[in-house]
Amino acid sequence: MGYGNFFKTLLIIFSVALITYNIILSTSAPLRQGFPGPKIPSWGYSVDPIIKMPTDTIKKRMFHTAVTASDSVYNAWQCRVMYYWFKKFQARPGSEMGGFTRILHSGKPDKYMDEIPTFIAHPLPSGVDQGYIVLNRPWAFVQWLQQADIKEDYIFMAEPDHIIVKPIPNLSRDRLAAAFPFFYIEPKKYETILRRFFPVEKGPITNIDPIGNSPVIVLKESLMEIAPTWMNVSLAMKKDPDADKAFGWVLEMYAYAVASAIHEVSNILYKDFMIQPPWDTEVGNKYIIHYTYGCDYDLKGKLTYGKIGEWRFDKRSYGTVAPPRNLPLPPTGVPESVVTLVKMVNEATANIPNWGA
Image (tube, rainbow, N blue to C red; front, side):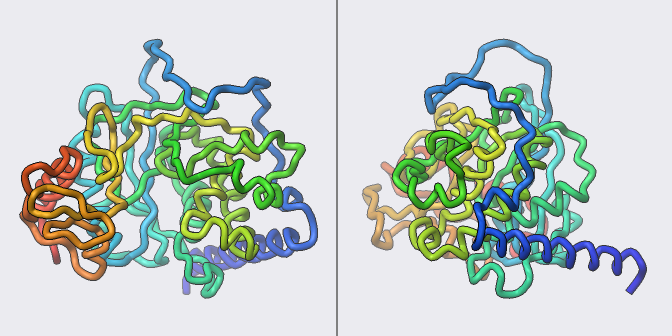
């Protein structure tokens, strides 16, 4: 092992030890003791959860797109499709899309390094994620923000199952980040649990926005403060049986929302950021299609959600093998959003070299 690799290993060991120290603290003292204090001053006002975007014309403020992923086939094909559409819209009028990084938290290179700009992050030590692999996301962001040379002043956190449908402008404004509001992130409902991680002196529980970490456009310097807290809150929530049971698969999303509020980074809740088929039926003026849900229809175009349809597209059908080229289009009557999704997947797979390899 060379000196450089030895030094990196020592750095990772030290960082993991720091995580463990913070978690130990969280079991015996208020969680805030393990966090850096907020450096962003309070703006001293409250706003309606949904804020209209300003209409003023400003100079371009480029943002860097970052997507975390494992080295699984499932994540790999989604990242390839996502990056294909990123490149299509990156330089189009209206875009403020700068560089792109896939943050690969497997700890080792894969065969797509030459196709997609990639940063290799170390996974959490074995057993720390308790089978919840998403906990590697904040840890990967901490490493990337500490080690990478990021030219842009803003970061756009995206996911592999996002398809960009038009050029994305920088929807944030200064210290106000831009985020999509999720109906199932309900801070008020879980106030008792969240107070274990969000102290009363930080203000009302409504200071926690109904967001996850993605899609979010945020100042790089703000994210550098948020990320370590996001990591520690995620791990602390996973260790807390009540929080783990209450939040389930969206635990890490709650952790980001809490971390953002701890550092007093408010968010413009931008409903037009993305759509989620099959529930959202029209693309309209949205920027992203998020295909997290399965799309099942009968041959008459009727949604059969919860039951495998005669026609279906579900990313989970392709966990161990990439979807084939030229997927069958939906039957007549299926909403525009689903038709657009399948057409865009087909275009990407038709044009990405060595698809399925």
